[in-house]
Length: 436
Image (cartoon, rainbow, N blue to C red; front, side, top):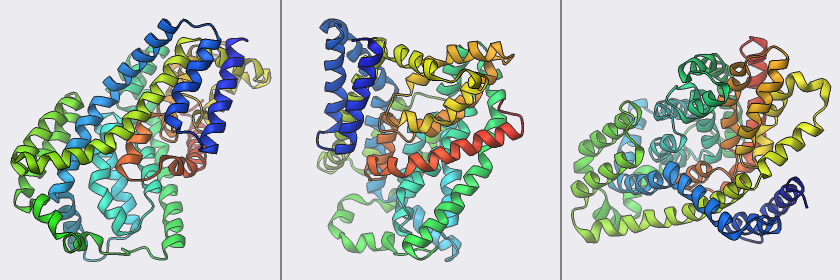
């Protein structure tokens, strides 16, 4: 059996298992690729090395940051700092705060958080701050994550981001030059973000029946669980905790200090200030541990899948198959057509498939007089629509965990919304000549 056929069979099995929900998806992502690779004749030692290497890469890029980030923000939430901020916002707006204001605020905070140029850091900054407000307005957290992910995509032009760095290698240009080319495409996101506000605002009105807050849950939190407040909330340390939080954001976004180092120090300082006794902080650490373990298991499953998919030649086989079935008369617009379909494709296939297509797309574009930078630029931003809507992307699970929602339910809403958003950005960019 050829690598291409085996890859197609493997993807079909995984997709069926995802929809049936009979087997834990973490083990489906790990076991099915292993069996397929062994059937292709891959040596067990080579298979193991590929799996371990990809898992290590995932831990370096996401895992360690997530470990200490979850510890820090769980501690910060327990201190009650975010509740105080929410109450202050509500008092400041004097009842004029509505769901549209909430969505605009989400976008602004996400844009600030994305100054770190990493979606996970952005999630860790945005969602703990905003979660209390989402609950207070009974706002759909799936919609909130879609809005944040769209902002993440729009902010992908930052020259110190991993998307620009990786794509500049394929385009054979300086990252700053590629960033300048991507910036006009990012501006095409503005009308799309506004349309998302309008859509989710009307959807919220239909589901909830009001644009204003539904339940004053934040102020009632203290009344509902006095024992928890007595042991965990530290209003007397609000300003110290806020300074540490702001300092962490500055360290991430301005000084570009590795995120796991920032969160290690932030966790230590927050623990020593608020919970100096082991009996106090251990219970909170254990609470964050449950969330981390579930997410870690999914990260390992995804890593095994991606590692095998990349190392066995399946990526190359699938990419060649796509080119083979593509109509020749549409070759000039192949990169735009594949980009328009990316949200649907990456819902079930690792995004690395698209990375493997870059050299081929650049070669085809060159035959029509298009520079590599023109071909690659829209992928830098718009591919984030897809990676943020797929269960095969580790960051999606991080966001879903922070918002306390089911990742599959999120993807059901995200895929159609982000597919339309993606196509709109392409069309707007095409009309204004920034996408060709």
